[in-house]
Image (tube, rainbow, N blue to C red; front, side, top):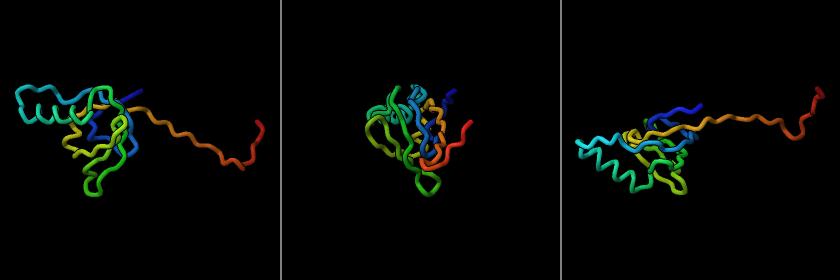
Length: 103
């Protein structure tokens, strides 16, 4: 199961795919300009995202990997990007020298 959230809600280590850039509100010039800049930076629908780092004060800015490049954004800018998060399942492996117990 996957969740769709604004990128601004993601935390370090989260991964996902961009499903929407902006809200396509054509009457807000500032929103359109930000959407255009995000697209120029490579934040396009289908791009894979991995959150790499969060700033110390308030978690801002955030640094992420977008496909093969690294970009930093403020959280208020990242809120314009909707991401489908990947489910991450941690696997715990026994140490190589651990004794195996027969079933």
